[in-house]
Image 1 (cartoon, rainbow, N blue to C red):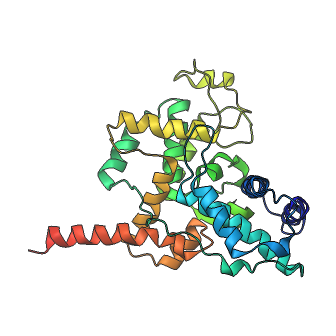
Image 2 (tube, rainbow, N blue to C red):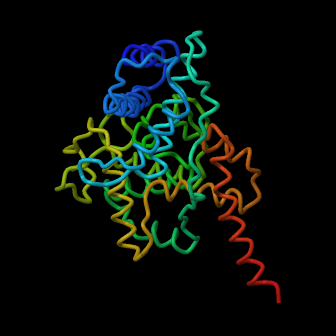
Image 3 (tube, rainbow, N blue to C red):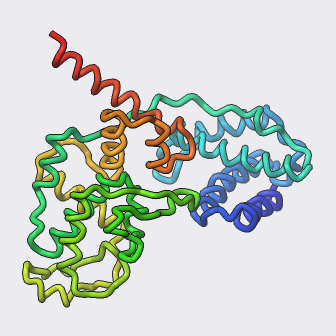
Length: 309
């Protein structure tokens, strides 16, 4: 199976033009299938010999698998392995190579996903925890406001450049998962916050969000010392969110994705239709967007209990 897998990965790279991260994930998950075959002395198994019985044995192997840290694979992670294998079988079938029909393989049932969101009072506390009078604080507030105003993923936020942000039109284009483009929009308040941040920058560096030296002070002239060509990493953005969550006294675990969840929930609570929210978030499937309907239903119940006397 080594050669069919290699052919599949090259197909993903060249023909489907999938991201390096997607290909890396496929390689990782399919290498575990090879590991399973080797444990069964089946490393030279031809595709036509793949059966449902073999796949079921592989799933037992995954369920009992222990990582180097002695942790088991979650059901969700096991499903990722199966999804990758189905993609391989689909590729083989498409190329008239006899093998097991991918649609015969079902995914395991997993618990319904829930999301954590911030309420209005928590949001206000989070933003109020930032001192925007120096360059670092202005940047941090711009990060929080942009995350909440646009619902961007942290990787999308980190990749932003100044030139792509149209502050007059209050919109810009990003490429999300699978390099799919979408338009996102800024609120008037977020535009003001970003403009205030950019006024404190004296560099001409391309990244929108940059690293600041530890000794940066409130003096505008000292922003000359900023390592302005260094784009802020996703880990650093997470640290920014965590820092102000603690300062605001919010006991929930808040991540950049929490602000994305909050953005989507607020849209639905205020009357947006789910299809529009799907497009704004860049979800390939509406099923992913539907996780927010449970949160908004809860919000409606709380409203009913509060006002229906």
